[in-house]
Image (cartoon, rainbow, N blue to C red; front, side, top):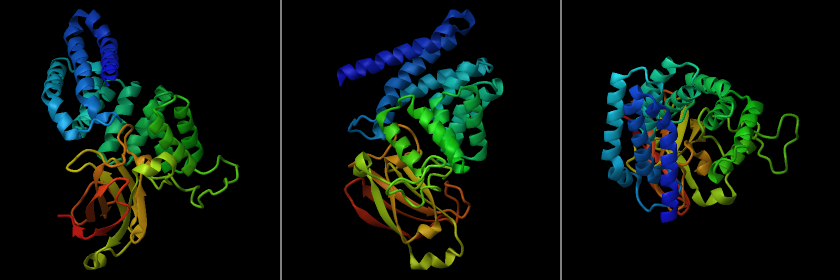
Length: 356
């Protein structure tokens, strides 16, 4: 473990040098360069336990509390620098990344939007803005975010995140061939093993390549699966994914049945208890799924590196959204329960509350 941390620290130092060196060479930008270097190293040290897949045996909240004040001070210095140098593109990009890592999504959108306005040819600005907008929408890739991913892919065809999210956006539009090609291109970049497994599931959901017959045991819905606008969608589970699965049977309390007069979107998601960040896994379904079993697995992850793990305690929510948005609005119907991933088996989740 110590060797691993030393390597991680060395990589953070290299990243800081790469980011800061061009600015340090310029006398007028030396302050920005120093600040950026500190932010990269500090963020890597403080946030790695939150975002890595290593089992640190600590909650994200406690890890964040340990490094939070120092990181907040570093970000504050960068904010001050940008007030003095509002045209510093690299500074706005770094601030956007910092906000995104800290889950300050509204602030991340503002920072990336500023960077995008400064340079419409910046793939990182377009990608960061699209990602922040999608996360703010609860994982829903909205049309504006999809357009930003398309911009990023034109400017940087090999951008891994743009390939990932661009694939989801293409699948949401029903462009299965395009989604497949983007995810296959991402696989060729050799992403981490968990991401590659997720891609395998998503590609399988698209059905056979155009013109090819379905394989043995293929789902009859394979041709239309995986078209949710969110990285979450209906997914089969199997192999290594099966050990980190959540399964609930969703029902609606009799007292609320009169409120559901027509079909409406149903969001089912898992998040860490007391967390206000993006869910660990989510699916967008229809209220017609009430009365059926719904499963969540690492394949339903909304962010690379943040996935359900076996033995983890999570909060499962099922929400009927009359607005069609994943964020809660007054009048929505919902239910919640606590669940131990991979151990609780099939649980009954009753939608029995009305959002105020």
